[in-house]
Amino acid sequence: MSIRKTLSVGLSCATIALAGQVCIAQQLQRSGTITIHTGWKVTAEAIELAEKKVQGHGTAIGTSFNDKGSGPLHQGPATCFFTFFVVDGVPRNKGYCAFGDAEGDRLFTDWQGGPAKDGEGTEGINTIVGGTGKYAGIQGTGSWKSKDVGPNGQHVTMQRFEYRLP
Image: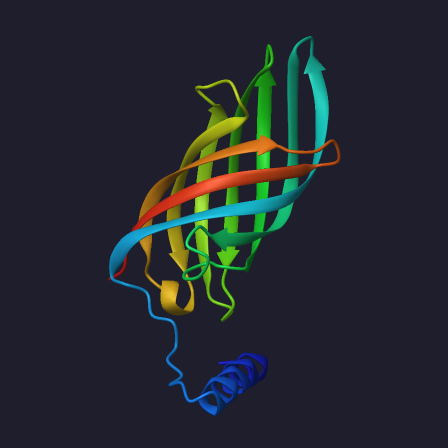
């Protein structure tokens, strides 16, 4: 455990102890569902290859919030790298993300997607490929759906992870 993480946990425990509570590290059940929403700042670069054919790549940096208001991945950093290929206005997307939590533990995904079935934004599947700390050895999949919410790269994604731990 890093000094920063140790101090953070220690100070949190001291504050809780002063209030008469017991400090227990957040535990993750062996299997379950995590639903989060993430606000992003998306930066992308694209190149027109031919008429109606565009390729590109980019990054998304943001913060995730557990839909329950606490729990796994709540108020944690999120980072994604992605590529896209658009033919006749229809995108195909591929990328990799890291989602964190307040304790500094991380969950990693490999994802793909395309146009949302309802015509609003994009959607696809995350495959969980590992993690650190409480997420070490995690596996699973889940759906995601994203849409632009502003003219300057503001974006939101709703995600659901069905997971299991060893």
